[in-house]
Amino acid sequence: MDCRRLDPESSAPEAAAFFLPVAAAGRRRFGDPFQAAADRRLAERYRITCLFPDFPEMPWYADRPDGTVRQESRLLDLVNGRVSGVPRAAPRRRLLIGFSKSGWGAAAFLFRHPESVAAAAAWDAPFLYDSLSDPEMETAFGDETNLRRYRLLDLAETADPELKERPRLLLAGGDLFLPDLEAARRKLLETGVPHLYRDDLRHPHRWDGGWLEEVFRLTLSLL
Image (cartoon, rainbow, N blue to C red):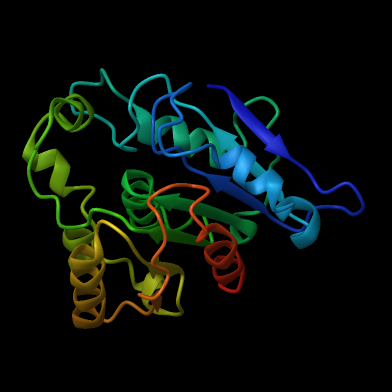
């Protein structure tokens, strides 16, 4: 797995943030997270290492039951520092930043591995998806039973007690998926999972659309 990085130049990093891609490696239809973070000098200004993994296939951050797709396992290795060139930040100093399908992935990863990351952000994510609506989703999940294992609205029902101690998830939006944001908000309130919520970050559905720095800043506040 390739993983680009930005490090603060003038001080030691205080945390590590993983910016999860929304498309397969080399595809920039929704902008480039590396460039968006570099343009805003997020690493330097916030004293944090920013990491930008790439996946060769369309990422949905799931492991397929037959073992042919293992995106969740690869991300777990990455955040736990088992990939060459990736810093071994303490779990309480690791963040995930995602939007659209990678926002889905960031939220799912937090709920499935609360011991591995401190907090996650999901901006404009399709939380209402409940079926394999396109071939890429079928490739990633295999079947709808597996899909529900990664769906925030289902994961909230059995949330680890650790996730109910303090806010560790930022839900924000949006552009394309405001109904999904609202549904996720209702579910988290219903199941007693504290979180940050912003429904006023209504920017274009791109990494460089204007939402990134505010989402980044709010996620840092969850550390």
